[in-house]
Image (cartoon, rainbow, N blue to C red):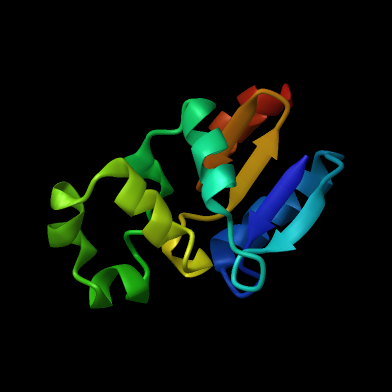
Length: 116
């Protein structure tokens, strides 16, 4: 399992603590240093994550680029390309498992996906 997070993010810290408390084995990756590639983002979409759920709408980059107003006019390919340029644009944490991808930390959703 792959846990993609930003180490300074309180939600990511909470999610990591939850994974550890529930005995989940995972590899950890810092999204700011090792951002998701376009191929990864496309795999996450193919796994059922809606494109809209990949955006970190609370982030400074999202706000400073006025993406709320720009995204509706952008194609899926343009959005994926932009997401791949900066890990901080991607909603976090991301948990990639066998057959699923979870964005953001919602304990009940994670528990259901992991059978915990």
